[in-house]
Amino acid sequence: MKPPHAVARLRTARIARSVKPFRARGGSQQPHCAGCRLILSHCMCHLEPRVPTRAGVCLLMADIEALKPSNTGWLIADVVPDTFAFGWARTEVDPALLALLADPQWLPVLVFPGEFAPAERVMTHAPQPVADGDDADGSSGGVASGKRLLFVLLDATWAEARKMFRKSPYLDKLPILSLEPEQVSRYRLRRSRRDDHFCTAEVAAMCLEQGGDALAASMLGAYLDVYSHHYLQAKNQRPALTDTPAHVAVHAAAALAAALRENQSPSAL
Image 1: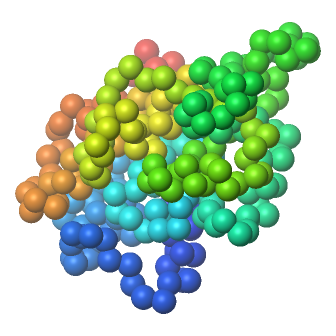
Image 2 (image 1 turned 135 degrees about the horizontal axis):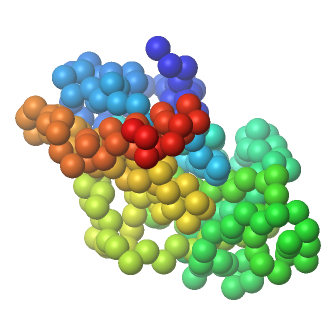
């Protein structure tokens, strides 16, 4: 069995602090898989979604997000090897989070709508890698050689995310990536009144695409669709299909990722 990723570990720690069991609204009381959080009949742990990435993702999660079966930060951690997850609290901050943000190997970028921040902090496209010396004055906004992008995402409801943004002074010095997507959200596991509100996995996929991790972005989008299908089929007491376009896309991305890991040309597959 694979070791638990960052979101799974955060979930375990949050459960340990709970004084009563967490019950998701409308959730099934049947046994759930510890690996994918779905009921056992709809388990999708046989999929291999992990893809090598240049970038990392740091999830700053509202109190009970890691406990929700519909949380998509879990899917990001399934796909992106360097995913970090921390619980958010107004009065304290995890020292490990501060250490991560200060780690010189990373260039942290906070992903949030630019309308809520000073214009000088906001960019609409992720920085791109540049060679040593090519951006000595920082004029291009690129990522210096040796550094990796770290997308910092506030994993919460919109109301909670705005509160986290306002009351986290350690985030105030980070540049802000303000995404301007042309598509509407396809997320179906929670209701939103607005089509321009995206779930955390959708936001991460857009970030990865901008950061040059196109394969991981494609995998994450397809993996989200597969999870949504299994989740909703289980909720409606219907069997999960295994040959949807999203399933096919996940398997194709996994094959490409395996080829990359073995230093093979994807065209040889």
